[in-house]
Structure formats: structure tokens, C-alpha cells
Image (tube, rainbow, N blue to C red; front, side, top):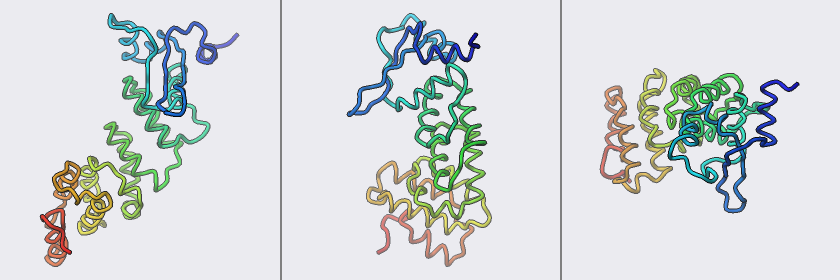
Length: 250
């Protein structure tokens, strides 16, 4: 006799008694993938699904999801049905991002917690992972994941400020980062300012000083404690920086 877990896996695989449908994917080269599911199982896992399928505003037809790949949605459904994340290998940053998105979209805090635990225990963190993971934590305002990132940032901050992925950070997340790394006694204000200036140049933010992105960068720079600088460092740094002046010196 199959146990409850095996029965749910069978329901997911053979679609027996399925009464709802999802079309997932947004590729211009491929048809969306079709998933036939079970309203009651989905509703038992998420209040959002319950409202979607059992409220008076319940609509007919398939649910269309274009924000994630079908493979990520398949992993998501596996969690909904049997409360397991398929972890025979490390999840990619893209897969993790899409699973966090689905967990937020359908208000499944238990899935979010499980993803963070996966990152804590099983993910093979590399230097290149830290900044994308930090962006992900900030985007979802996920404190446990932020704390994991903080551990990595404080251990390797000098190396991390020199990797290419630093310049790909979301500008909206720089203020929080400046506050964190400014507290590291071995990281100078001069170095942080230099990295912020380079971030602006690499992303061509200084080409449009009225843009919201440029103003976000300036806001981050304004969090630096310039009183820590010697007069010589101030005169060669903030006094000439394009972040604090209308024009960048030639």
C-alpha cells in the first residue's frame, strides 16, 4: 500500500482527479508548459490559492504564470504536495530567486524558511554568489537570508569589493550595504567611497545626475562618516568626488 507521501507524488505525476490548470513560461520560442493540479491541495498550502479557487471571484480557465521557468514551478509544486525541496544538487541562483518569488507570491513562509535553511546547510557558497544572494535577500526583505549574507560579507569584505558582481548590485540596496561595511574597522571610508564612485562609472550613473539611480548612489555615499578622513584624504576624495560635486574633475 502506498503511503500518504507516495499518493501525493502519484497525484502530482499522473494528474488523477486534477481540477485546475497552470500555464507556465514566457519564452517566445516555446509553448508554455501545462500543469494540471488539485485545488484542495493547493488551498491547504496557501491562503492565496484558497482565495483564488474558492472565493466568489473565482474565474474559469488556466492560471497563467510568466515570471518563472516551468522547472522552478515544478519544484514549487513538489514542495506544495510533499513539503520537500528537490535537493539532489545545488539550486542555481536563478532557481532560488524564482522559488523565493513564488513563496512570496503565494504567501508560503514555510517554503521561504526551507529555502534559507537549504542555503545555510547545503548551498556551496562562492565569492561570486554573495552579492546576488544579498540582492535577493534585500529584494524579499528576508532577514534570515540577510544575516547569512552579512556573515559572508564581513568575512570577505575586501575581496568582495573587488569582484565584478559588486558592480551589478541593485542600486537600491547600497545604503544598507554602506552601513554594514562602514562598521568594519579594517575597511576605510576612503576605500568605500572609491568603490561607490567606480560603481557609478561602471553603470554610467554619472551620465544622468537627475536620475533616480544616481540620487540613490549619492544617498549611499552620504552615509559615509567623512569625519574619519584626514584632511589630505578629504581633499583628494570627497572634495573632488563627482558624488558630492556638480562636475567630475578632468
